[in-house]
Length: 315
Image (cartoon, rainbow, N blue to C red; front, side, top):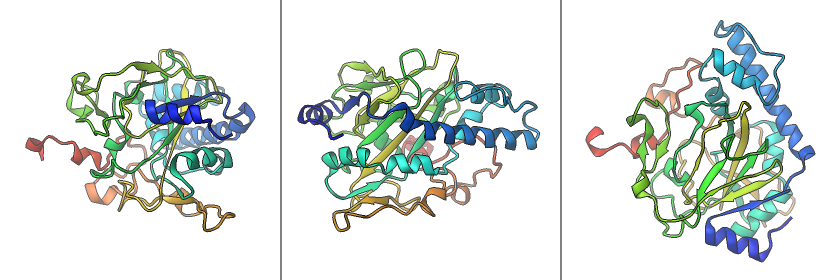
């Protein structure tokens, strides 16, 4: 399902594009089942470790993790930082349909970026409400010139009630990385997120991305965006996947490599996920380097952006 010339122009001009009905519900069902398995595994681990007393086995995809979060705050973050890529999600990431669209943006050589995410936005949870930021700010300084299109794919209907994304139309056009700050330096929210102050944002229309299941939102890595609070009673599940040209800097060097997904040198090429999928890009690389706690249930996240955006006086 290649994009039309008009859709491509919109993507490059506005910095984002919503494509409805990109996937069928049936195509996304294996991902949902895989997520259910991750939640079940987490519930069992928490229960066996004495961290919870109820595995909430009567709950389903829309509510179970939220019930676990009530007894063990941080459960949703643990799902987010799990970092192990399952086979159903890997299959979706390398799907011909997605890669055909990405090839219209990048060309014939395509690599998957090590930063992919499964996001579990549980209701009324500040730690999963993400402030204004640019994706490239979470990577090493100097990689902002690498074009890294992202696909944000909701696994439920996403709307203004359950915390969909908002984007700043055309906010990528300057090519700038705006000043970011560490959110854990303001207020009582002890998060790992970066944020852009309102006065540092460029002018532009704020667009709330209302997206039924099956839609895909394509983003430029420089467009400011955020997710709003989930005010519903159900979890807003989503995944985001990112690509780039394999010969350009990823901003994640020394932490995890990109994975080649398509090359004109071999039209039958398919990525080998065996080792790559089991390397946790969020936690494994930092444990020794920053002395992070090794408790498997610790929900704090660390990364290179923590030092990049420290105020000079704090370094």
